[in-house]
Image (cartoon, rainbow, N blue to C red; front, side):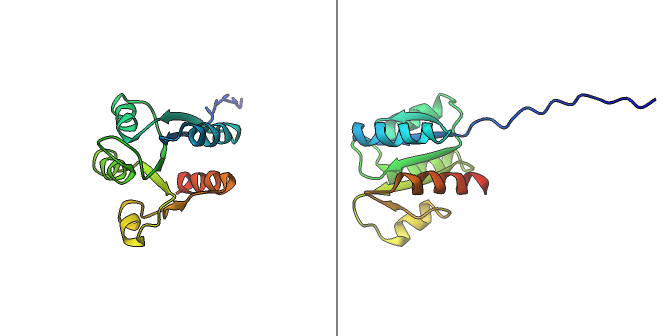
Amino acid sequence: MNTVRNVSHDPAPTPTVLVAEDEILLRMVIAGYLRDCGFDVVEAGDADEAVRVLEAGVRVDIVFSDVNMPGCLDGFGLAQWVRRERPGLKIILTSGTAWTAKDTSELCAHAPILAKPYNHAVVAHRLRALLAC
């Protein structure tokens, strides 16, 4: 007699993006867009708040952060913290200011900095591509 086992496969959890952006309107727009694309989104108003979210144990799969933000850390500082404290966590930085490739490639080896203004679809595509790695 053949027995068929009903094996349930839990779907993969929805990827969670931590969006760190001090300009609230920009943050609201990209966070809303990413939610519409199927991501869970946690928002932070600056890098210091992003670190507090990560230290609180919130599940985050990828960080999308502005570079120029007020506080003790900017986006580069956040990227350095992530590399040191959460080495498996991926990060994409964005800025309206030109930065050298060396500055960004050392912190974001898998995703070069995105220049502002960025295309929202490109952001979603890059997030998905990094999550697939």
